[in-house]
Length: 337
Image 1 (cartoon, helix red, strand yellow):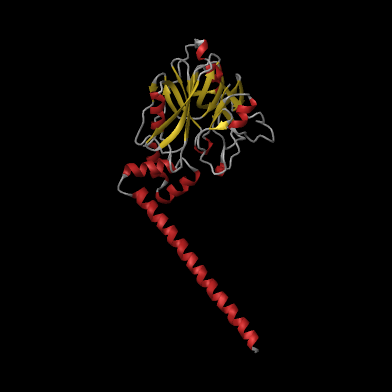
Image 2 (tube, rainbow, N blue to C red):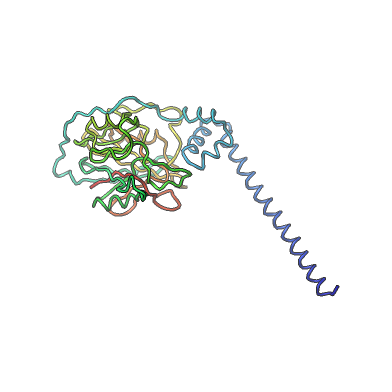
């Protein structure tokens, strides 16, 4: 065998040896990192502070990827117990609609105020719209067609010639890849049922023809009989007829939130909380309730949150969207004309 061939074999053997060593190092590092992450997660979720553990677990269970992490450490029964012990209680109450029109002074009809809100774990934006008649529902015009993908909140605002908007109801979101094409539950637009069935019993959030925000559990048929002209499905309900629901434990996890409410004078409160970011972990349901009460809401409910939470004003997104891919497409949006 020539020296040249021997040299080539030695080089190949050396490459294989280095490759194996490199692979071993990479595997060792990966296993070490994964092990460290597992230990860290175990300490957090199984540590001495049950309150902190409950808060983190509740937060994880509101995210697609987080659910998988929580299930590594807790059984389904344990998770159910933690979540049910750290949330807001449901209510059977429905907003009392007096059927009276709000009287808005002429010099206040154009008033829109945007306030920066913050707490120990969150930052966000609160928009106060003085005239409730300016609120309407933007709905995916392609519902029921083969090209029913949702639209960006910005698209709904632009299409209606509006000045502002927030995301509204939920939608089917398999594996976090939902495109806003299939709205969750019932959707009513201009007094017509455009999604869901008349006998669907859901948590409904909508406005009547005289601009009263109605929240509560009801069928679509009942909603139409209450003269609700625009509505979406989501929840939980936070405040009904001036009374806040009861909070248990941590009041939910810390996540991005979108909330709608109405004051006694008719002013509409639109709240968007940033979350899952270093400067804003997110808000709990209790945080949102307290903010709504602070600013005078007599009726309020939770809308779709997470990576869907967005507020648009004067053609721009004014909150910090959590999604790495930017604003998500959604089937509905509350817009301000």
